[in-house]
Length: 399
Image (cartoon, rainbow, N blue to C red; front, side):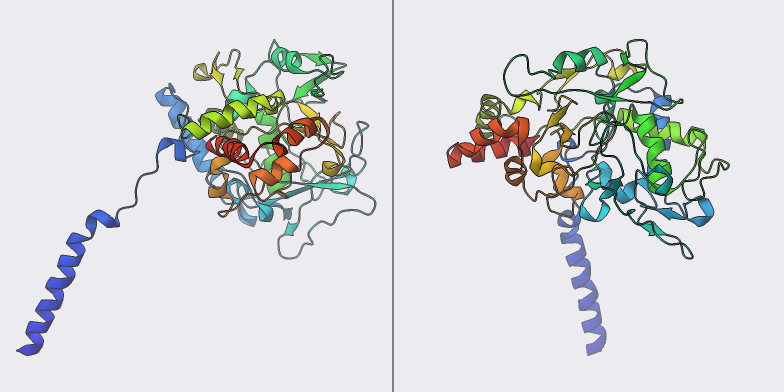
């Protein structure tokens, strides 16, 4: 009788605890400004369906049976872009083989990307003797459609290769040879048969299709109708991913929403924004850009705040890895968009891995590593009072 009473009491206690803890057991739903996922506003139902197909494709994990290359870097897009966010030191890509604008001399030895993993029975690639290399931390996916639709004319208007205004900043575009499957718009500008790149650390990819096809082939060893050459055997083989799936991924990347600034009405954030402009960080990290026409209407003629100019800049000897792509110099790097930087810890294991290769472990450390054209702004930041520095850092983290 006593045992029966104790058992009944235990059951009632557990029920009570379960009922009273229900409200506290739920996980709070993140706010929109705390997420990189989600679409731009104004998509049609068919566009939303394509976005969802692209979402599934981005999360697909490839195996030997489904086309994973003999050598590869990752088995899925999300290996490098967890939660659509930035990569970290363990997902860093190694690029090698090009030292100037004459091209990559190691394409027949695995260049430009090192496949550092391999299926059983195969050996991972090694960097060939004599090849210079650089490590690239994968960027976040969000807002890319807006960046793709900034016109070439606007990029050239921001460029100042000869520093004609004397401000010490001489941004330039990267002139690249584009693949045959990338179709330039009627407003695309050419120079000696080359086009302007805008994606990648060196702005060496023309558009999101170019970037995505390269990722399938170079990161995962997967062929497509766009790029049918198997990078291990150097033989043309049947597509291992469908054209529809590649296009769905490209559409997904196009319509991911832009990161939303947080705490923008906070007094310290407002002060930091003013100081950010005062010390001319906005000389490269432009606070506003505008898109031109896009066949995806929600991306057309929109003003947005990415904090980049998409141009190449001399970042000084300290960031010269001796490797380049396109017409970029080895010491030139594309200005990274700062939007979403405050959320990058979420996809980087609770830490910051900033600059092109993740070498900076905090926003302030990244600022201090700036050299070359950014030297004056770096020095101005270092000369600020501690409270002013904190305001600038809080503003950047709010982006």
